[in-house]
Structure formats: C-alpha cells, structure tokens
Length: 497
Ligand code: AHR
Image (cartoon, rainbow, N blue to C red; front, side, top):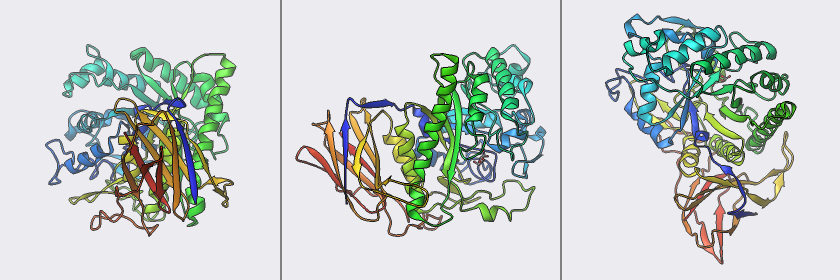
C-alpha cells in the first residue's frame, strides 16, 4: 500500500497551545493515594510524593493537570482538604462510593504540580455547592493576603498565593449520574453567576464552562448553546469529554473512532460559533477537551469492588498495544484542531485509566499509551501545518471512508525541527512519501516506531518493556523527498532537522 503526504511551511493551522498536552488527577481509586501520594513508600519524599511517579510524569512533560475531579468534585468540600492533616475529616465520597481521608488536598496538589513542573487546572463543585464556596475558594488560592480566606491559607503554611489561572465550572453537569445534575438552564445560570463572582475576586481567571459529557448524549448542542448564551462574556472555554472502547474486538472499527472525536470537535465548534454569531461578538470560545482516552477494560471488574474503601482499585484499565494506536490517532486529531482546541487532558494520569501504573509499596511502570503521549508532548510543540494526505480508505461498521493513514506535521521553529506523526491503520506495510515545501534542507534525524505483532500485548510490573518504541524506522531523504515504510498497524514519529 502507498500513501503520500504534502507539507508546506506556509500552510499553517495554528500554533500548538502547550496545554494540549495536559492530564488529569481525580480523587478516584488509586490516582492520588498509592498513585502520586504514598507517604510510607520507600521512594516517597518527605511530603509523601512518590518520586518514581514524579520521574515518569516528567518524562511525559505534562503541561497542565486537572484536579480534583471529575465526578468527585460535584460532592467535594474544598475546606476538608486544607489545614492540619490530623483535623481533616474522613468522608463518604459518593461519586465513586469510597472513603475519602482528605490527607491530600489543594495545597498538596499545588506542591506536587511544582515538583512535576506543570500548571494546575482547578475544578469547582457546582453539584452540591455554588457561588459562595467558589468565591471563597478563589480567595483562599489566589488572593495575596489581608482577608479571611487568604490569611487562612497563610496560616496553613502557604504565604504566597497559588495564582491558579484555569478553573473548570463544575464537571459533566449534563449527566444524570452527576451529583447535583442540572438542566442546561439551571447550570447556565449557576455557572454565569459563579463565573461573575469568581472574576470579581480575581479578574485574571480563565474559565471553562462544562459542556456535554459526550456528544452522543441527547442534549448535546442544545446544552452548549444554552450554557454559552449565558456564560459567553465570562468564560474562555467549553469542555468536551470522550472515551472509546473496543468491546466488539473489531480493530478496523476501533481505530476509526478518532474520526468520531474529529466530528465531535467540529460540532462543538459549530455550537460555539452559533452563539458567537447570535451575539455578534468578536470573542471566540475555545475547546478544552479535558477528558479523553480509551476506557473499557476495567468496567466489569469495577462492579465487583466493595464500597467505602480508601483508594480501592477502580478504573485500572490495562492498556493493550492497539489502545496505544487509538491514543496516537486521538493525539493527531487534537493537533489537527490546534486552532480551536487549546487545552486537552488525557484522562487520567496515574492508575485510573492512566499511562502510568503503580503497585502499593511496589514499582511504577509505563503502560502502552504512555508512548504516543510522550512523543506528542515532547515533539509536538510548535506550529501545526495543514496535512494533505493522499491514501486509500476502507469502510467499517460505523465509519465510511476511513483513511489507512492519518498524519500531522508540527514545525518547531525555535529548534528548527519538523516532526510528522503518523498512524498506519492498515494491516499491511505502507510506503509513505512526504513532499516537503520550505523544508528542502531538512534531513531525517530519527524515525521512531511503536509496533507489535500482538494487538493485545500489554506492559506489566514484571514485563514493563513488552510494548515499547524503537527508533529503527527507515525514514530517509531520497530524491528531494522523505520516504519511509510504515509498519502494519503502527505509530510513527518521523523527525527532521
Ligand atoms: O475520568 C473518569 C470519569 O469520567 C470522570 O470522573 C467523569 O468526569 C467522567 O465521566
């Protein structure tokens, strides 16, 4: 099979917002406790943070981390997680029906963000709570001092304000499962008033309105229009969430699911611009795709987990090689929408549907999906160029005209590097020709490939390198072009300088 990609330095989509390579830590299962925080672990630092996990998070170069939820946040009282640890209450956590010890809270999270060199993205509870708690929380986090809540922060040992810029106005408020679920109008008005008041405390906030929890939910579109009709002046983003599965064990259809993500983004952008048109404003609302991943392996097991445990094993998907391919395709999709998607969070980061796994008291290892994220995050910063790919297509149960190859080029001007990310969806080898305009003097420095004969191959603590990339790809300069072979069903990173 053959594919051709045409790349022109002048055909720019947009600069990549670094926050496209974000992730998510929720108080859910073992994400926090025995994930990023485990005080009696041999590798924990004096604050209780696991250093082995910190090292892996740094490898991913995660730019922003959403916290503390997710569904969790809709029943969370932020006050429970600050102040002396011995005084913090142990509470019933209703979203995941666990016990929450509150040993870890906002200040611990902020410390951890500094250690992994990432920006926080704080979500607030608009399920059981509202405007008053939100404005107090912003005062606690961001006000320099001389007021009740800012002085409380100082008393807790944090003299300087945290200056958290990005805040999510609730989580998946359209979903019937959400604690404090609301109609579009109920949420829109609450988000509007809360946003207004939060910005009175700190005008520099960048706010994310809660969009639909998925685009197949019947209220999609109408929800976005109603929410933005009310919140347009106060927010910069609307959130999107999507998780994909391969229950039917159909690789062709599974790998086509990034097309669903692409259509979802286009539809959400249309909903944003519909309101923009109605309001006759120049302000553009951007997309925060703040939950995306593959999620299905653990769902049956989770039904068996006893409630009211501290940090039970929940959502511990063990990712296969084929999952890594879809994650790569989703990264390509996000990059192609760099003009409108400015924040994206791989959900989640550690143990819970995550690229990093840990064992309590034991090791930490990289799941298969770690690699495409790491490559995109490290080599995908710069400017996305419009890819024109000429390749054959195939049809599946749910999708028509699925291209065998999906690819996107990112030009990093500072480093004078061009990186082409490409997934070969075909089960045969693909001859891949790149026609480059404006990069005539560039030559291949590396061709990284993630490939495996076994689509279901996984990494475990005992076999952590079962699925890992190599850089023996054959991308080469030939007759003014770059030519490469893409292995059957593979993730490719072709780097030129
Ligand atoms: O990421 C897991 C859960 O998925 C989140 O808590 C929720 O927002 C979504 O439904």
